[in-house]
Amino acid sequence: GGLGRGVALLTLDSSFQRNRYARRMNKSNSVSEGIVIGTKELGKNIVEGVTGIVISPYRGWEEGGGVGLGMGIAKGILGVAFKPAVGVFDLASRTTEGLRNIAYNAQTNDLFGHRKFRRRIPRSFGRYNIIKIYDIKAAAAQYITDKLLDFKRDLRINVIYHQHFLRTVIE
Image (tube, rainbow, N blue to C red; front, side, top):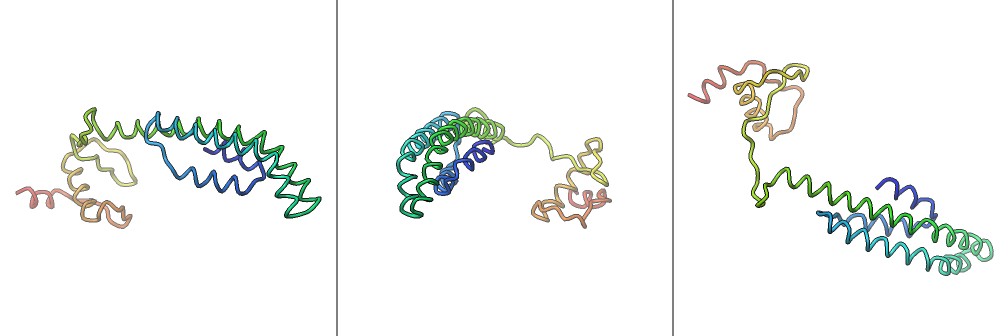
């Protein structure tokens, strides 16, 4: 995550940073998938770090002559030190990302993959978002209002008086 991004900036290699950002788009959905993706990234980072010792000075020489060669040598040395470290951070990040995603999916599905449903309508809040004792009528009125607004909160619409509305809907 953030620590790997910070260390990746220390490599001074913009193409490495772009490639790493593109690889981060592939999300992991389980711990094993996170370990596999993280291990692949670690391997790629080690290879890029080791090959960067030769490639970075060569590219620097092509682009900037002697000064570019010096910059390439610096990038190569920084890359061999920091790119594998970025891979280790990415491995840890991907593993925890998979753990988080599997925990999130466990909250929405039961053991057999069936969707869980609410036991009751979500609580409504009072004015100024004060939590009140659960009231089924107030919760139903808030749920109907939210459903009419497609669950997009509009601060101008508040459910203040709901008994008459519920009475006509239920009866």
